Length: 182
Image 1 (cartoon, rainbow, N blue to C red):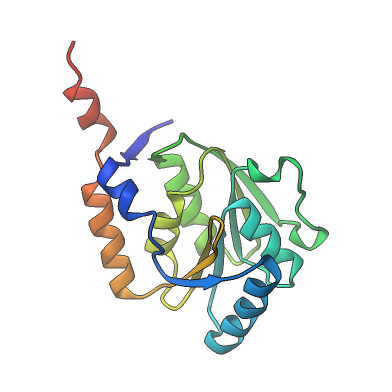
Image 2: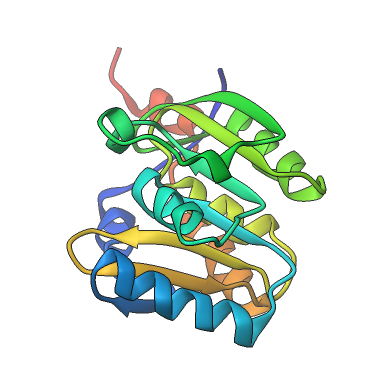
């Protein structure tokens, strides 16, 4: 496992704010609004990041091409039958980091024309950044906003540039290790 990025406290604070369009409401309310959003936008890809939002999308007939989960929220819940993936990929990605393996898995999954589940051993949250960075323009990346609703990110050149700036502010893992006193 190779850690490429580690989140900084400053970026952690920034990322608590919605990075796209916040859709407020219950699961059924947000999914109804999401269906209308998808019909209007007709995205080339839908990518979901997070267990609960992914499960709800599938249960409401919205099929993400790529689902990134860590199975932490789904210990009680289970993905519906409609969520069966053509391919499942397991990757390590410890909390607060982005690994090279996770980046590669997301890039390869986005390039394929099949339904893929990436199952993260660790935490999937920061992989939202990688999904937006490598998704085609006008794709939708959806993640949950705890106790509020869901966030829908329409992929644009501006969003990709913003992600690149976020990644520049993250600490490369090797740099962090060199800072530690011996």
